[in-house]
Image 1 (cartoon, one colour):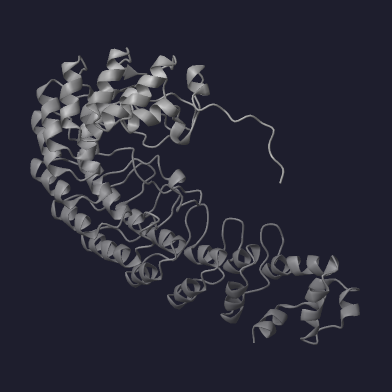
Image 2 (cartoon, one colour):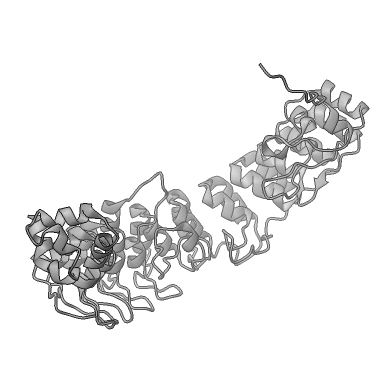
Length: 474
């Protein structure tokens, strides 16, 4: 067995030299000792000249808290005393030890730090409100923590886009009592204006009821999912820059009871967001948390509530997409069925495609069948003169392509680029044959179309006809 000639690294080598030995979470040995209240080890490190003020480093390489922050967050008063005596500051970079203690509900630690000169900061109040610590929140308010303050807005390319207050964080996490406390304390008349949208988007019905009783209007916020019109409707990254109201938020996240509650308080079911997105568009949009999975039956229930309240079943976005387009993209058969029963327009939008063409492109055969049964024009043209058959061919959706052929799709229609759907669909098979893919040739030979040697000699679009694909399906 080979043995390494490398000398083992001393346990305290990095600490004594002032170099941080990064471990999980960007912590060095001193940080770990502080987190678990190993006071003797901390004192030993200090005798070896360790930098007790060294910050941890997050994954992005930015400094965060120090050993003092970790000790405060875990309520280790003796460790905090040692570090304060060693001169570790209460504030390190953008964070302070008081906020870490508050977020973890360390009531007595917060009192201790304030006795040592810590200021009741807005971050500390936010931490306590977010975690739901009622007594701690009250103490911070009583000691002068700024209730009315909002964070500065983050970058428009980060989430969340909007600045947050302690009230926003309390509502996001469903802490009704703390939200009431903050609302009663705030002197700002506009403090609660967007709170209803925050609570509705997180599904906290008790908070929504409380805010409605206070008359919160649910003004728009830039914080939750927004349907991107470039096709990435299921991507959180494409939805994080939305501008919408409480009803849109609840409909998008499929909170049926909250939608019903908002409609009872006369929220407009046809209210538009930026881009002319209506609550019914959000209901059709398949945006839920990954652990929740699709909530198709809830989407139908919300659509029924909205339509009964006067929502237009054919409401269009600024590019002409209807709720039926969104239901197709979400592969929500139940909602497609309900919308067509309610008389949804089966035609295309102003610049792109019909719902049938979308279903064909995505390969949703069951929805294609439903739309055709509902009266969709099977040969309707898109802006580039493509039919549903063209879209199925372009994405090589074989099952959908065969279904459209069986339902009588016109195979002679040429697109703007002078291609029939059959020519588009057969091209990958032709390329396989031309590249020596004899398995593809043998497949064709099973239908007695042409022997293999003939298939290599003649243009494949003349050998393989649309009937070939129908025969293959049979």
